[in-house]
Image 1 (cartoon, rainbow, N blue to C red):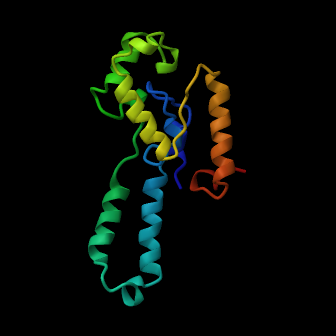
Image 2: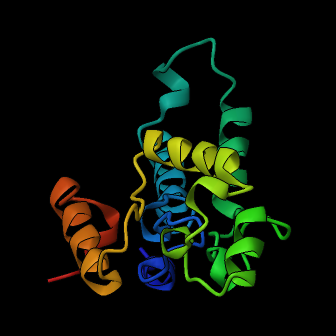
Image 3: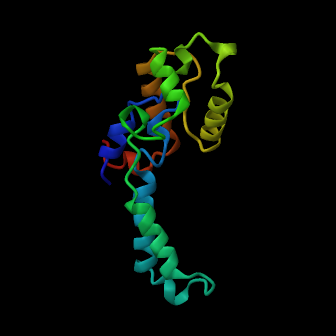
Length: 159
């Protein structure tokens, strides 16, 4: 596994407060897993004995397409939607992320921020929800990720 994808995002918290290191698209896990699934399907000869109702050529083509998708570098490094309201607003207010903003109840983007964060939480991503020390929070999140997924591809080369 090329850990550079994870290294590129493990220190990045987006303007919305979502930790890019916890995202399988940004940290490279999705790309790596789809490659491994494809290899296992071929290595085990699944086409010969697996489910008859699966179009293996189309399935493999889909896995190759996902694997070819470059990892997201995170919104602070040019990834995500170019016109993201949250990124534009936080940048205009000169805050690193929304937890540092004083607009609270007057936030014009509260609804979209809530949708983003609730979707991210449902997908298992980590989110900064208060003004906790950024560096300490990142250390905590990396430790939690390693603890929850000790056999994760992200940590297989770490000693």
